[in-house]
Length: 306
Image (cartoon, rainbow, N blue to C red; front, side, top):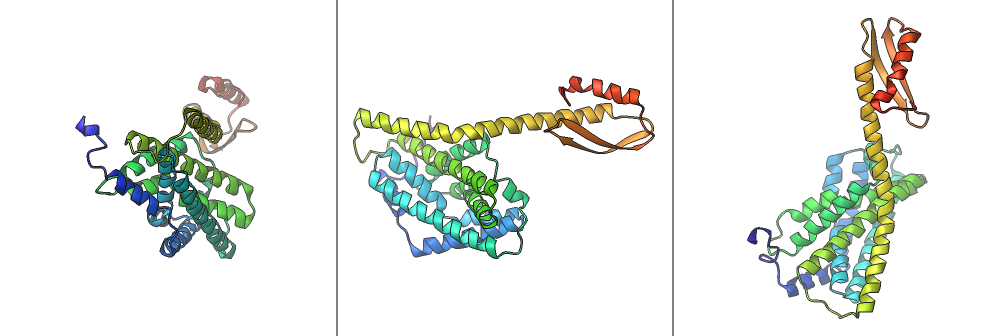
């Protein structure tokens, strides 16, 4: 039991509450750190540098506000929730303005792979945010903090989606705006929900008693929001899995079937919309009979219709 006990090295309830109250305060130093972090993240995305992006996430102060929102929800402290939302909203607004100004000024306006990766969130991003939030709130409530918080900040990646959305605003590309903001919303919501769940598990005393009717109403609202946010990521995740399986089938087909004595496959590409596999061969021209045989072999690799 002691191996999985999360109460043994926990801070006192008073200390946890004091820490959460501090997370609702807007300070000049905090905002300047945020601005520097968002500029570093924007540069990292702009030059496609993973190391620079990780550095920005390590110094970003966004995580604490989200954990506080989840905590205040669990202890039913609406005043703390309002203050945490106000601080977090201010941080998000500052981040978007700062990053948008950077992308307006920078001469590098081509989207990088790091940016594109933040435009199609899937169900796996939901799970990362959920598990990251659990680790974050457990780590935050320990007497000795350890290295949990920096790790959670990197895993859940709050900064890059905001910067990617800002790139979309600066270049007027809706795909980057809505895709990245959706990823940011997933991260924010599920970190907060997991923080709320762990706060309940830690048996932190509630600040206000709610009637059964009020509690059910709140639970219904949270449940509805969660389902609405998750549904698109499930479809994107399913499509990602389908695409991955089809790519593997196509590669297996090419590796097994396009083996000739005097002809070599040098290049291939796939148009998934028209279900067409394009190949470039070097060597002796293959006969129509061989082409027909290759087409007949497609269903064997689950490539019907290609």
